[in-house]
Length: 111
Image (tube, rainbow, N blue to C red):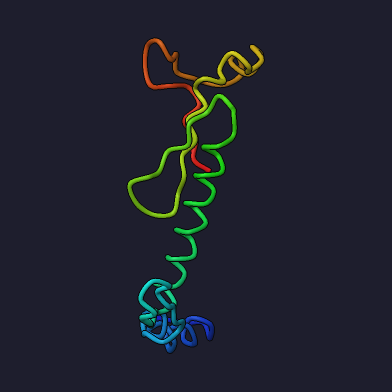
């Protein structure tokens, strides 16, 4: 016997709407052509634009890091391995870091 909470049943009734066209309409500035998007397509576009903006902003900052695009999704990686000399020694004692000369770069984190 399966039990469903009311919110599960309510969500199940509208789940298909996430993929239906008509949630938003975008207009191509060059051609004037309009395209209808579903909720998921619209959300993906917004998140990709935000990720690309952040990547470009981080690229322009004069700092010892390298922003890197992920191969999928909306994530942005920031390689901070050149910042290792700026990290106080006490943090190397209390955490497990790989040695950059011996392995993967230190400080590859996801934000």
